[in-house]
Image (cartoon, rainbow, N blue to C red; front, side, top):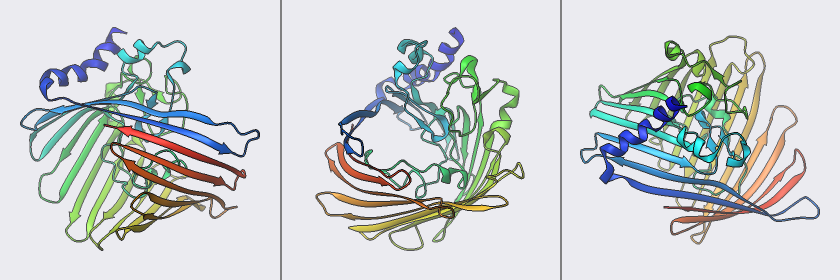
Length: 381
């Protein structure tokens, strides 16, 4: 226990001592209300989606800094798999235990940039350092409250790069337009018992020691390595090649990203191959585009995966229009396109008010003939 406490709090203590006078504080709260749905009798449901407290800072020279986020409501899994786990869900772990062992630390890292060509980072960044999926994944619903269908994480297996593990990473820029990202996972004191690794990006519910963890052996760190090389061609876009070692994804991939070809157009595409041959999901390909013409725009994305048999897992379409007093979206998700296609129709609106955002949306899912009407509120400062 003492070891866990010491390692978990080390980053916060080092960062705080280095720039105690330069720390900024922020917070974010998200609420949602289901006002009506297909159930009978209908009852209003209220929930809190997130409650986070952020501390970040850097020295005057901008060469050393850190970030610490407490997810008061629950935990965010490394690699982006969001799990809302209320504190009361675990009866054998008190709030103070989770606080001291770092299990409420959603993001905790320090960084050092001794020269312009090198930046080092130690800790865990669950927002996904090196994540290039600005259209097909996190960029799709960026800025909206929880009044729309769930985010798509599958594209991450096609466009590689996201790194949410606890460990050491480096960004190297030896010449103009060339970027080299390198990361290795280290024993993570904030997930699992005895500092076990959290490996991969899975949908497992149990975040403690067990199915999602392996023994914390420093000698196996390079089996949890990721190497990524990117090159930017002026006026064309950026190309990335990524290698993930056995326990960091076991994939190789190429991707392309651009916002230079046409004014208002952001485009990305990528594919990956699982090194372990014969796997059902060995090959993944995704592409997405976002065209913004000012007041209006449209997005499209799709994912294809398989090996001996390929499946169009989903196609998403989303036109949107900014009326000034609010912004309207029509989110259309088509699931399992090649086999009994199912649709989710989700029109929603958002309105920014000061440091917050309100929204409302309707969801209809043909797979189970279900519908709901939701409203939401997001406050941040």
